[in-house]
Length: 510
Ligand code: ME8
Image (cartoon, rainbow, N blue to C red; front, side, top):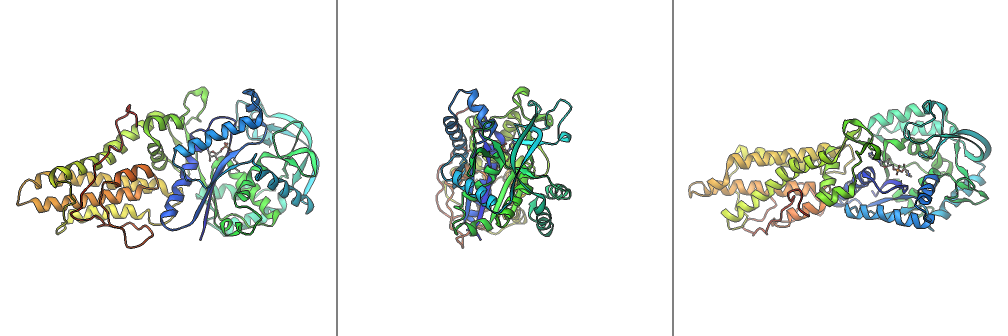
């Protein structure tokens, strides 16, 4: 089975922010986990470069639109590179591959008689790039997502795709597949949306009003609506309609924030059905990061967390860890620079880093840097070993975003237990006397092997740190090429390498 993991393609009307970093890191965690299980995975991310708000951002900076798009999308790519994201495709909707693809699809739907033209009057929110119902606006005419913009009344002639003819088929598809949308709360939300008749989707914008877009192939006065254009990237990335796309498409999982549930759960399936294409395998939806106190992050509130600044200060893996450990799929989670620093000190430096540092330095001091042999195991040894193994086993199969926080948490609990074990068994004292030395060897062996398994488990979350942590530990290969959580893979008598500091004190350059 092949897996095709997609992130949204992000608007480039500003620099990349924490939310963009988050979804893309989640996709990378899933891909890394798949990779070590032998599941071939294609990961796509990228930038959504058309539409009014990107155009406005370009003109606000006095730049030619294409130059602006090139600069901004390079910032996104640089952030994902810094975060060690192994994307296979970086999609850009202004690219020479994507544009003809969109034109081809619009032309196909037109030929099939699925598009119609009509005059439409409605309030348009440039932030959402969508027409809004009056009931979606507050009294001053602002939409909920963009209280800083007035959704002005617009009357214009446009092309439309009727969604209603596909509603029951989409609904039936979701109803028959409990696993199609996760978590459950978003499945319920979508089923509620699909219970009511749906309005036609306006799929064009007059080029005179929104010049930054893909021209309609049969009517140059219009550009394709930015969402219609953007969703198509999921097919463009696979070389659709060349036959090779099918196997990947069958394993398509869209990782998205809850803000874009309707576009992915209603419009995109309708577009696919109109094209005669199967629906993706799954929608993996997550909630949002919000500022402390549950407030939406905004520049004016001063509670925006800049992912690049966090990486500068604490490293990419610290941010990846905070994402993995502290997100919740079904409810918003608070994040701030102070919370990230607190997590860095309390969990990464004091627990994970400390266990690594003390075990390695102690083994160097007491056992000449060699892995001591393991003798008979006591119930305490067995207890800590099974705790570590159970935590690591949570990483034995493919992950879904919902699993990540609890699985990460379980590994951290195992680290705490290992720390307690080492403190109470005190192998450094045992090693001093001839009578107890072999018991000291066993405790050290058990703890080092636990440490190994902990970092193996955490590899998809903190790839660079895990690699650095594992480098000094002499390991035997497991029995299978596919990674399996397994105890007892340390080489008795082999020398440990030098340990590096995994989580330097804050303030030092990493
Ligand atoms: O919607 N917490 O782009 P966008 C978590 N171009 N994730 C967040 C977040 C937050 N506070 N803020 C943003 C678009 N995200 C369209 C998508 S796809 C065919 C077109 C993440 O730049 C989350 O994944 O507004 C959300 O769905 C996405 O960024 C929205 O990015």
